[in-house]
Image 1 (cartoon, rainbow, N blue to C red):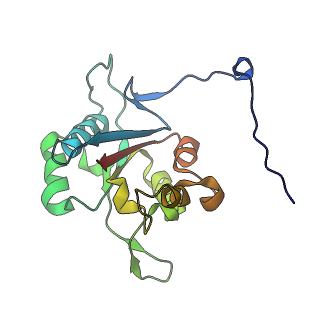
Image 2: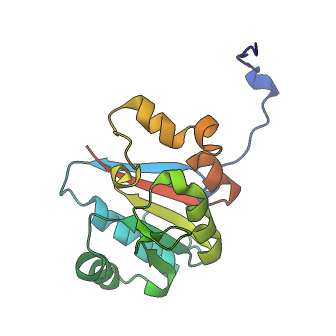
Image 3: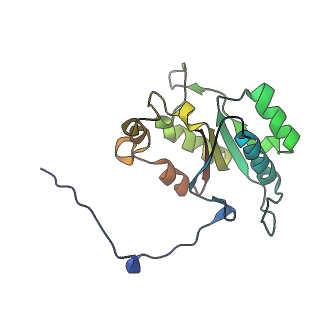
Length: 185
């Protein structure tokens, strides 16, 4: 029988690494960032503003200099892309050529299916294909498949590396991308 082992290491032996920032002090690269808040408080508007600034290479509060324009992927089923997302991003001044929105999922057999995070390799492929440096999942609960978001075991089943072979954090760290996860309380 295989035996599990808890591994520990002294912090004195850990090599420090500097955090790379998309927006200093607020959105680190290759990390998961959450925007939390009650429905209707403006999480989507805030995200659109951030993406608008980052896709056009403009500055966000606290930045000393603008970054080069980046590409972003927005996975959202809550907001209609024709009536809400495109008008919001256009009005905010986003470079719409750099913002890629969720438009469905087709299986290898060509049948339509709901995308969920258990299909992470497909998302990784799109991140690479579109050179996206920011991925927004709004809200996370829409993309966890049949997992009940209030059930820790279900969520672990979606995100656990033993079950899925990769985690969201490792996936985005591998590609030095940032995941912005919006969640309603």
